[in-house]
Length: 114
Length: 113
Image 1 (tube, rainbow over the protein chains, first blue to last red):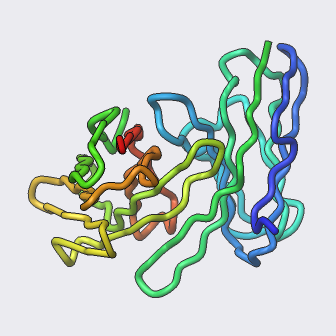
Image 2 (image 1 turned 90 degrees about the horizontal axis):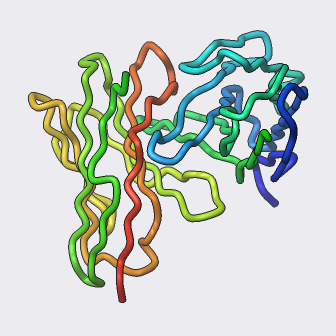
Image 3 (image 1 turned 60 degrees about the vertical axis):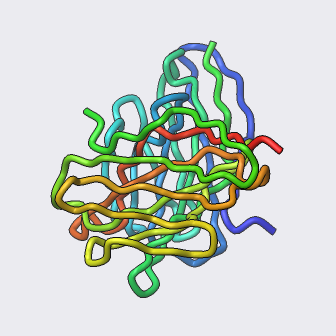
């Protein structure tokens, strides 16, 4: 079973619609992240949360919002989707062990905004 | 502003050859430099990481070389195999930001049989 799951895996929507992408984890990690991936741009951080009461903006938070419902759940919302939000979205968790900090990524959600 | 720049964008290597991917960073406060590997249809996964107190770290066929004065680090894949074909991302983070990573643009590696 996957430790970090994302739903839906694929979504096609129209401009102006509200969209929610959900992320759940069974790893028991406090830290969670949302990234978007665009070809040639790598992964860009949208929002991150270091615990349930802690929410922080990343590099590209405009047009997005998040909710940390529980330690295991971190949702990303697009309040009014626009075509340039078409991208691959990843949720991740992280933990530090010794001198290594590891991020564990979900399988991704491919979002298309028409 | 891209704080971590990665090159090349794509790389084709023959089986058994050495693959080399380079990254350069701007922020001298960065103190953790991981490499992530991503296969098609999957999320990235940590491959190997280094901290600036050492100049090289090796794990199996994968080696990170780190040059603090030049603000550069690179991934070397020895004896490259077709199964290594993937997209590779370098990244960097600062101690004070926990594990908030800044990623490079990615390199698509193809290893021909």
